[in-house]
Length: 369
Image (cartoon, rainbow, N blue to C red; front, side):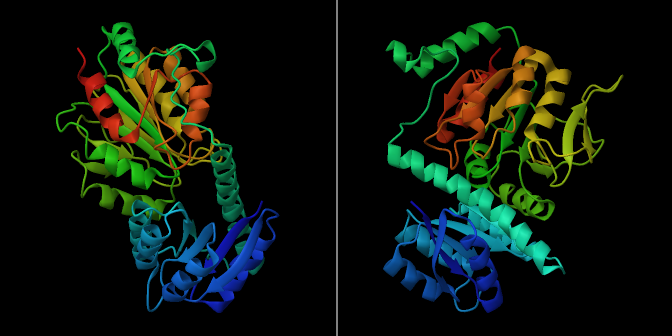
């Protein structure tokens, strides 16, 4: 089986470059190209591709408008946005991700054409590999994974309701007040985070720290977008700023973020570093979670959400060892069930919830006395 791809870009040169790079991936077949959105929609109807690579900025019908038409008319077709590294390009890309694009790729800006192709190949191979895995699992008919560490396995033919699991969690943590919420999220985050943040309590009275895997320019656009719907103010994290309740702090792209408690300070401060990537990620959820385990012990709530890879699992293990509570987004509501799956398999997740329910469960756990 091959992933059938339609390449859409108004630049003849870039269409050729993207097509050539994709053709080098053994499980990918480029079935056609298109120079604008209107032509692309006709070809999607005729060819039924699995994936469309879509330029953000195009004449006649731009990428965002085209994407919305694709998601309405051809919901099974996945879309990757190709975005220029500009503020406008970043803002439009975030809008596209919220509207249902699977992921995005930054258009390379190298003088060396060989280096540009390597950049494209790394990004395209990562995303197409994930899509192939997702498609294979769909074809196998695997059901939604909602297993928790407190629930007996299906093999034992025992069933425990979510309510029973939460009662056990409440009993375990009844004497521990949550003082911070930390979240790790990647692919699918720009779609999932608005759902989460708009349903959080306005008087949660704890800080929320988020690692979303995303380049610097795009994080700024994401923060701007989230502030339009979030019940709490969303801030791009700044170094040496005190972590305050009822604030959502998002790690800047290209920096590692952690918290550190200083003598005499009531609240810990945010520390941003140029430490190396972890799990190929900078910022990394593991990096943040590790610092949370050191500063908050059992008074922390860790959340692992949709995303590729396993970033977050090692840090959540340390949080669990310190007594923290850990929730995960379920498979059915995840764009990619990777990070949450790895944490669940590692046995560090207390309970798994659909995205629409996750904010409600965070509210309940944080306000639990």
